[in-house]
Length: 116
Length: 111
Image 1 (cartoon, rainbow over the protein chains, first blue to last red):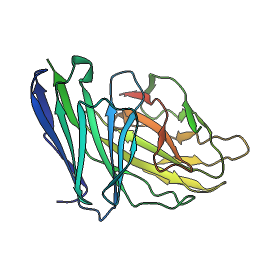
Image 2 (cartoon, rainbow over the protein chains, first blue to last red):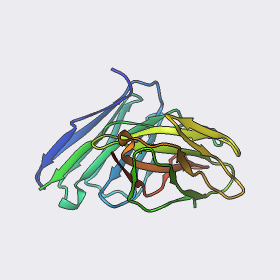
Image 3 (cartoon, each protein chain N blue to C red):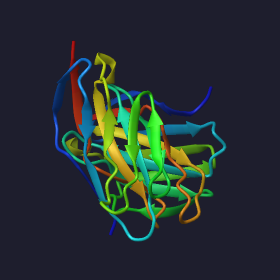
């Protein structure tokens, strides 16, 4: 398998459930990202991992908990979510770039999450 | 901080029409600029990029030129197809690790 894969592609969960989203990249990258895409809103960066260390956390509620066990895998653990958390969750990866070098990010297909 | 402003959509065109989607940016230094495309039900795909002033990125008939003097990176295509219907995002990568995205422009091409 190539590129960035995400599972599951669709997830429906209740507010009391605990679930996890998985992302895997096969590109040899060393930085990984979680984004949230909601209808009619700009893409929101949630977390950034570089060399398996979390380097960015953009004021994301604690009900979202990321995990990066190695440079190829990224998880987003979910618990006690709210209906407004329903969105498309996108994973991306890239080479860790030095300033001024424009390494692009490669995106997975996303997980469509619905919170009831 | 860095920011990207895209023309608001939706944009509806007939097949073979000329397409322009405007994108302007604000950033310190010399950012790299990108256009991503998102087809229905899919993630974002890189369409083209430019890493320095006056560079022209091109792919699948789409082009965009990095204009530092006007801080712009407008996306153009001479003849759109129905299969080009998608959401297009302009983005930049400046001094921060992450990409800064525009709000996206929905394009619908009618046969």
